[in-house]
Length: 338
Length: 106
Image (cartoon, rainbow over all chains, first blue to last red; front, top):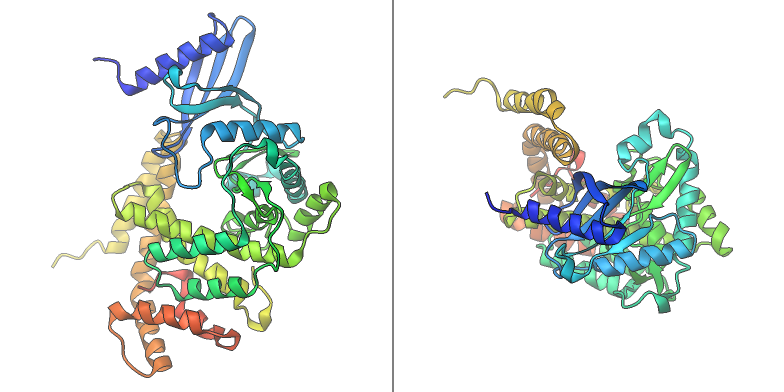
């Protein structure tokens, strides 16, 4: 048997580790964690005479091809380091791949111990003390991310209230565009959009349960910087409250672990400025709708031939989002149910 | 026609196989996907049970609302138009268009 792709990858990684950590450094316990066809996530240890380092590798094996809205691996790595400098809890980036290393685009970061699975964070006894403080901590972490100087962030996609609405509607239309609840939610969003655009701010874009590392004491790191961009900072607070990220704990709007008020208080503890509640509601509804459209897009991709059971399952969840939108916007007496 | 075990029982059997025999031998990504597969089959069971009633109910409500019958294919177009027109006092119409359990209707 010749060198297959897996063997090539391990060889290239071994060489990279020897260059970065010294000729005696070896890769051990390499394990694929998750990721689709275009994104990979691996855990491994570097063993060297100085001891063991626990690392995470994140890469796009194809190199330059990236998903729509993805910031790109180099940008992700740069923004994680900028976030670390503002005091945001994030891993430390220890190496960014260069093209001649033959590993595609990607980077290595420290592996922070803790839990990422929403089910465990929201239900296990081990995190009983973490849950009551997480909303406040997530709010504070968002505010720290928003302190990153956009001038240092390099080229980033820019999003506004206006472009988010237009982009979402175009995506909806491209996916068939025949859902009454979605049409109606778009109308609500147009009628309730913030009167002014926010100062363009570095926004994480996917800050939620499932993309954080939690320990028994609380938040340890914010992960998954794939869709970092410039936009309205309150977007991040709305996204955390999307019903899907409550993983069944629907009475706890902030990520399934806390209240909106705790989330906002955490944010305000860093900024010193009250969160605009109307704007937060707009982004929460917008985020919910946007997640529904992402689900619908996955359904289309599945039907177009990407036969992943996960993609099929998420695609079907577009219908759940319709129920969420109705509960948010059409509840009797105007009192949101979720 | 052979119809035993029923469709529901067949799905139960596959779920049990995935959960009790396959999952314990897996870890990481494959274990996660096995759990997703069990959940997907749960969705199929719900649709088998609730789907026909939901589609019929929707057709009847839509006909009552608009005063005429619809072919299955044109229903979704008509529903989207209602979504665009609905005012706050009409929101219960929207609620009527979503079936119990949030199953897709078309």
